[in-house]
Length: 296
Length: 296
Image (cartoon, rainbow over all chains, first blue to last red):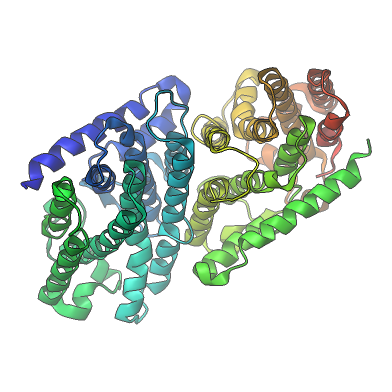
């Protein structure tokens, strides 16, 4: 399967949906809307929501009703970037080739826009719907997955570990733990939510979870390599920032080639976990490969 | 009804429940847990969760199963205080008689502890439960109320309006709008969530909503008066900070006595909205009066 046209089509579908979320300017202070829109609609690969759609498809559900849940993962990812970029955290001036949110709107509004996007993710998953293919019990389960992946035992916990590790002489095991939480848990939630909504059996959900954990690690290794080897134009932000900040990365432990090899091994393992899935899992398989071969 | 013993009993019940939430220190980085616990378990009147319990009771449900939902309102209230106190927002050094979260743990951790508490509110409302009196459809509805009350069309939106109004010459109508969002929407959610879980009829829910909107306003007027007239010991933070910051308040428009009178009128109206409720609404009636007569 050629993954590029699939990615492009799904990305457009998600972008169209996201644009509808912040279209009613009467409903909130304009400055808040502008700040939320700036970061949410400012590009992005939309990997997490695409994973949700692809996971649902892999177990037999390819309908539009998954979109709000998929979008909720992008809302959470976006909020985390806004807060991570703050001066009190990574203090980044550029993101995706543009000024970071707080550089444009100020720190106060950036904190609040992040808070609003996080909250909106849950608002989206709990909207009153008629004619909905997912029963309420499943929706509660999905909301729980989202909260676990995003919260103190997930992404936020990983962000804390990451801050604590700066300028520390950490082991590769600690590095792996940081990434398992900071990036891995939300990717895991993205895939599992798609699986749950798509009607995965317990054993299918287990396979999807193993797939997600493997690509989560591959994703982070690839990110570390890109941070070192990518150009400013490709990354949309300064390259080499990890090293400057004293952040330990996979290439620091294994070298660039060694890190690439490990990412490839993760991808192979991820695809192996899907061996009992049929051709409807082709997008998930293509996504695994894409994740390590992307240029940004 | 003497409301004081009721408040004390409910507060203890909520405090005990909140303490259980952050007891497993293995589950997240210790620094994050410490920061979350510092603010969540550092005192507080617990008015929002008590309102949830009292609203459920007013329509006939007095069981323990409401506790996690009630607690979720306190988690959201606590996160909002942590973020509001940040240097980029209100820049407060003291809260409830103790240093604010960022003064103790640093700004980065304070932002993340807030994020984690907000996320945990939704985790709590969506926990897998067996033997649960609330059907999943009702739980989804409650999660939606919580997200709407807390998000860009609720509390966060109000916080943005509040920031924008600093040092501006605003009208009393604008002041009212700020408060309706910043404080009112979460109080409204607290009461409605109790009503929904307690099995309120549509007309009961409408009365509860009107009650909540009236006490929300009374609460804020009382807060403004306390900020002006309370002592540092009573407030647990510096008094007179609103005026120093150029924030417009109700006493600035109506004088202290005029503001107090308006708060009393709101309380009378709130109690009137409950005229079709029986003695099980006594705690809600008592809470309305307490809200304007409290000393902190």
